[in-house]
Image (cartoon, rainbow, N blue to C red; front, side):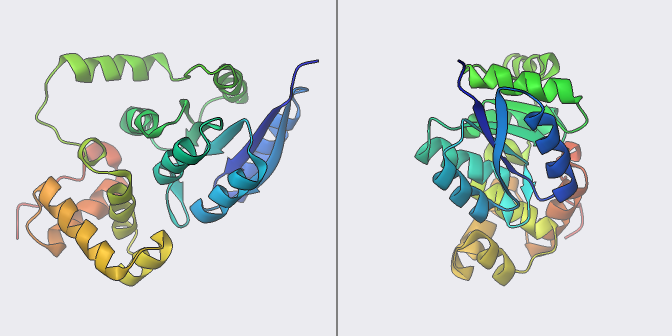
Amino acid sequence: MHKNINVVIVDDHPVFCMGLQKIINQEKDMKVIGEAHDVVTGFDLIKKTLPDIAIIDITLKDGNGLLLIHDISKHFPKVKSLVVSMHDERIYAQRALQAGAYGYIMKSETSESIIKALRVISRGEVYVSPSVVKDIVFKIVKKTNEVSPLEILTEKEIAVLELIGKGFTTKEIAQALHISTKTVGTYKERIKEKLQLENAVQLVYYATKWMEDPSSLGKKPTEK
C-alpha cells in the first residue's frame, strides 16, 4: 500500500481551488485535505495539517506567496511547495525555487501536467519546465544590465512592492503583513535605494507598472 499524497491549496480564487481539488481528488493516491485563501490562514492550515505538498499561488489576498513558501521551508521543511500561478514562470520560477519551492507550473497548463508535477515533487525532485531551465542557465552564462526586482529584493520587500502596486496605503500594507507602519516605511526606503528610485512618486509608478506586467521590470519614469 502506497501512502496517500496529502495536499493543501493556498489560492485566493475559489473557483480555481474547486477545480483543482476535483482534479487532485480523482487520483487514487492523492487527497486535498485543506484550502486557504491568504498567507496567514495558509500558514496556520499547513501548521495544523502538515501536508506532503502545499500548492501556493504567488499573489494572495494579504501578501506574496513567496513569503509563505519561505516560511514553510523554514518551519516545516518536510512540506514541499508547488507554485501554481498565472504569473509567467520565466519571471517568478527562479525566485520561487530560491524561496524553497520544489516546483513551478502555470495555471494555463493541463490538469495532467499539474498531477505530474505533484508526483515528481512527492519524490523529492524539482519540477520546472525545460524553458525555465534554459532561462536560468542563460542568466548564469550571460551578463545583462536589466535588473529585475525579483533578483535584488527580499521576499518581504517584494510583498511590500506588490501591495504598493495594488494601491494599498502604508497602514493597509502594515495590517496585511502584520508589521508596523514604521517598518513599512523602512522597506519602502530600501526598495527605493535598491531600485534607484528618487521619490515616492517613482516608487508608486514602478510598483504599478510592474504589477501590470512583471516582464516589463517596472522601469522607472524619466520625470521626477
